[in-house]
Amino acid sequence: MRLRIDSKAKLNNGVEMPWLGLGVWQLSSKETMTCVEHALRFGYRHIDTATLYGNESEVGLGVRKSGIPREEVFVTTKLWNSDHGRDRSVRAFEESLKELGLGYIDLYLIHWPVEKDRTESWNALLKALEAGRTKALGVSNYTVRHLEELLSGSSVVPAVNQVEFHPYLYQKELLEYCRKKGIQLEAYSPLMKGKRLDDFSFVEMAGRYKRSVPQILIRWCLQHGVVVIPKSSHKKRIEENGSVFDFNISAKDMDYLDSLHEDYRSTWDPSNVP
Ligand code: NDP
Image (cartoon, rainbow, N blue to C red; front, side, top):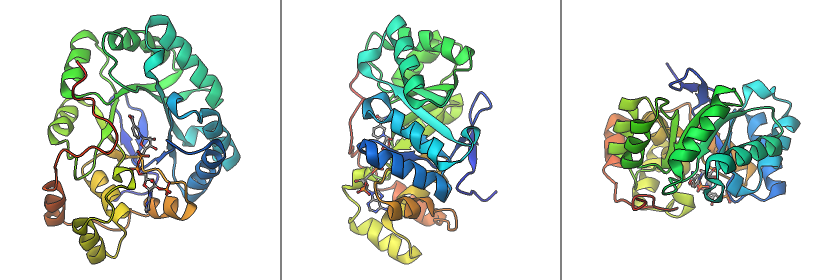
């Protein structure tokens, strides 16, 4: 079936998550509200924020201002590292819920596999899931090792693992592991934070498809069955990044993009977290 901007992935608990979302890291308060509202009016139905980003309340405002019914929008936020622990994680969850002002959260993620505290926080947050205060619970920056540890102690499988993912960081083993376990992989920094958009391999391919490099990178994630959340502070770019549902990258070009893997990280690296 052909994907559209509001097409959704089905998570392991039946909740549906739009394949494309707007990331809002490093957007100012003012930009956040405007960009969220614009993205939703354009057709996006998914916003990715975090306590760390300091813009949850503006995400909530943007959603309300857009006029799109709450239940049609999927909002993710995350537990920050200083908020781990049995009681503290629950308090942080409640604060995020209040900041967003949207009644419930669609997906709550443990932002980083903080050593020692991550298991306790996961178990504490399961109560929020049971109570329906978040529709789904997941993790971010978890490697296979962190996931193995979580799965060995919990009967609830994370719905999502959000990690850095782009052709220069094609995390094939992690993708296959998550697929096998029923964990939806989600790509952050899919545009490598804008750092290498001028590389010849991408520019040449984009030219052949008459598309932009960001569109090729976003499409590559989608064709790998990975949810993707590019960020932009520009309305035109938000529209450009959302216009990726009317073309296909050929199998040969997908293989070529896959072959570019060089373990390059534009954000941070959780692989050494014990
Ligand atoms: P991205 O890979 O999405 O890149 C964003 C950069 O690309 C910005 O500089 C932006 O500039 C530029 N850009 C966006 N669209 C275009 C375009 N069409 N043409 C040219 N340049 C463009 O970086 P992020 O790190 O922000 O990742 C996306 C989201 O993922 C974050 O906002 C956040 O929600 C999430 N994230 C999660 C992390 C985690 O640990 N869980 C870590 C990192 C990100 P401009 O804004 O000026 O348009």
